[in-house]
Length: 281
Image (cartoon, rainbow, N blue to C red; front, side, top):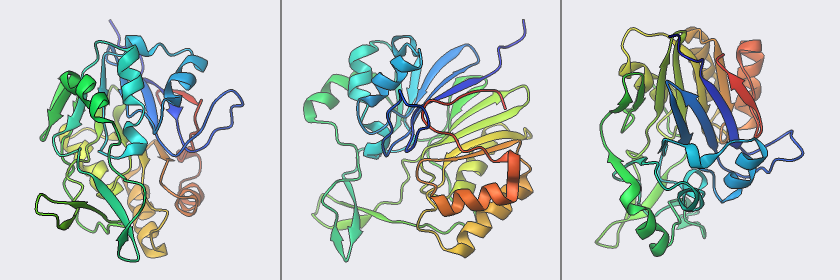
């Protein structure tokens, strides 16, 4: 029997064009692929529940969830999700719970960048967490990569810091960043939350999970809003050379980088918003 084509729905994104949807600084994508119902990230708050209901998505039916990395804007909705869905395991990196902060003028920002679950919320969720490091294949066609290796030529656009057990601030190497990769008949579909280790790193990590397969679609927060023009050009050049059917810059990509990608790639670049639904390419 032929596989049903992948379907992915944007439950949470920084922007929306749909009047019944809510937007926030965050990302959450509902995916149906290879017979599985998947939640990739859960946004910053519980608006993921509201938006899912508006879109007709029953989160109780989700088979498993994947966490792109340990930041609040991708994990804040999980306590509410877990109160609704009592079965789905959550694949999260073993180092995702660093209490990290961005720094301004040598001082930590007021709001923590890391996961902001309360102790009670984490305790309630703990039994659902499946800690990753290396690749985990959920099915033969679906993989969570574990740590994304750095790709050559990557420049990091923003650093985060966490306090170690000795009370010293340490740079977060973002080893807890991972991507979701789904092999479809027309190629790979790669989902990256923020690409803090570089979007090219995320792309290469996804390709490595299924050697020899082409990438059809890349959906990624690219974290280029503070990147230099040179760094943005490097990413656009690499995307053009890859020859993807569709590039979807979301969330933290930044308007300048989105415009650069759209100008160069034309119809191959799609700007998704909360409430959008895509079937295949």
